[in-house]
Length: 277
Image 1 (tube, rainbow, N blue to C red):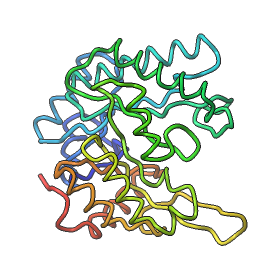
Image 2 (cartoon, rainbow, N blue to C red):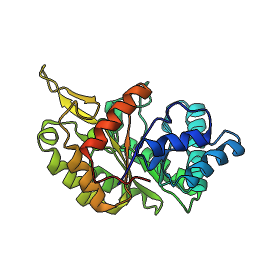
Image 3 (cartoon, rainbow, N blue to C red):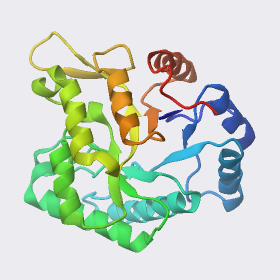
Image 4 (cartoon, rainbow, N blue to C red):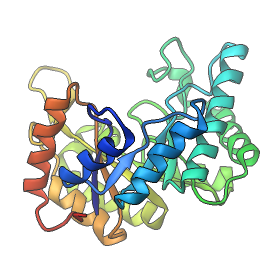
């Protein structure tokens, strides 16, 4: 497996960006430049990653391609397509988004997120993006969410059947799907289920942690690695068995200092598993 961070960390050039990640023991990166930036700047980072042997694990999208407002939806769809084409140009493992929400907050939880209409619109959206981008070197993926399609490995399998596109794959965030007591108290079994059902379709993974608060009712809180109960090494070992180059990307921290702190913790927990350049 390959460790990486979702943050580019402070840097003043593409060369420094790549060198910094190598020095930290990372061999995978999230591409920090967007498709609407100059091609020369894109190439600087692409070439730096290649020079230092860094796998480009993900190109992020993070837009609601199901927005109710037609103008916003069209703009977001176009951005999805261009980011996926960027991922293809880079040879990235995947471009990743969430399905999108049927409410005011772009990634929020709403009853409408789980209707038959939501499924139909999600499938059509994914098909349109993949068909329009027409990529050959990467995959379009949806990160699972606690309150948005897909919330489980079985829902992801349903999506695969409905979308029916070769360039549709999995971005795995196990913590995002730990949204119930049975998954929380059976996390190893749930990780096994993810591996068994989604297996070779997984292109990249996020790493963080989850903690059950003691207050009523059930309150599951995302947190930094080591501050919760996720079996981090088991998660990494399971993904490594699927693919020895599997990217495991540390995310959702607030500062460079936090990224350095928890990356060091992860390296200690995953000693001997991750590749060093």
